[in-house]
Every structure is written in C-alpha cells, then in structure tokens.
Image 1 (cartoon, one colour):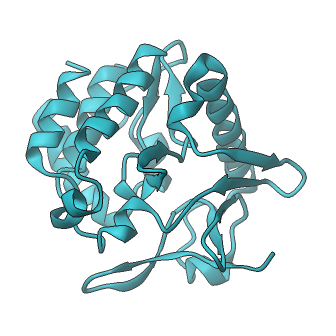
Image 2 (tube, rainbow, N blue to C red):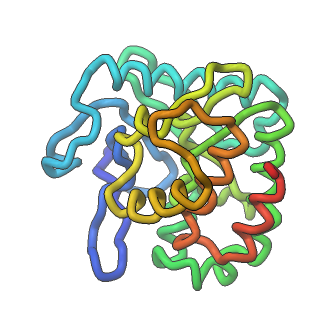
Length: 229
C-alpha cells in the first residue's frame, strides 16, 4: 500500500505539516492514516520540533499507552479503529477521508456544513475523557476524523491521567506551534498560570480551550470549558 506525506492546505499559508511531533502519512484512497513517530526532516521542512530521540520515545509510548487506555476503558466507539506497529513506531488508523479540519477547508466557519452536530459529538468525547480521568491537550480540529457520520478522536501523545504528577507548560512547548503560543501566553497571564509551575489539570484544560479560541466558535469553547470548571 502506497503512502505519501499528509498536509493540511491552510488558506493564506498553503500546505502545512499536519503535526509538530510525528510524521503524518496517508494512503492514496484515504482509508489509512499513519502516525509515524519518526522525525522526518523532509516532512517537517527543517522545522523539526522534537530533535531529542529520547523525547520522541516518550511521545510514542504515551501515544500508544493512552490510546490503549481509552479503548480498554470501554470507549472504543470514540476512537478510530487502529493497529500498532511497535517495531516501526507507527499507528495505523482506519479513516474514510481527510481530517475534520481539512474537510472544513481549515476554517471554523465551515464546521456546521461538514458535520451539523459536531458540537454535541465533540462535547461527548470531551466528557468521556473527563469521566475516565483523562486530560487531552491536543485539541486542534485536525485531531478528529469522521467515520460513518461519527467524530473520532486521535492524537494522545499529549494526554495525561489525572493520577499522574502535574506538569508545567514549559515542559510542553515542543508540542505547541509558534502561532498557538501567541494565543496561549496571553491566556496564561489572564488565568495567572506560571510557565514553570506545575498546574492543576482542570486549569490546564481550560487554558487549552481558551488557546484554541481561534479554531472554534466561542459558544463551543464556553460549553467545553464548563465540563472542567
């Protein structure tokens, strides 16, 4: 099966890498998406975020462990069907088309036309995470695919169990693009969150929603935050 690099075609920017950490691949008929935990310089075009192999190992292990945790907690309906190639550090996801963001022309103005009840479906996924004690900070709309009319969640390399030791924002700057940081830092100041201070999971989740206010309608952001306030 032939695979090629997968990009998002963002208005005003053109083809942009789909993820900052791993290398994104897709097959020709758009039925398989691959998260390849390999730092491919050609794909990342010299803007590689994770240069440390040990950090890439950590992200790979967290991706698989958290994905399996959500599945094994009885919530596979919210996930894409997947298989894991441990030897090559690849997760193969069953898809039907490009991701939710790409289907929407990379614009929040088009979400309703792509999936009219996307708000309710995404809120159900967020509530599921909350109910099983998972905090997922990879919330970009490209972190969802639609299969049989159902929104499916992916990208668990940036997710934690509530029982884990609290983390700081600085520890995760490699996960956050320069553009996202421009939205994140003012919200941190507003919420009184210090970049080097381990922070309560609920506060970090609310901060994450606020930092994505450019990618989602404000009414959705407000509803999502209420799950964690």
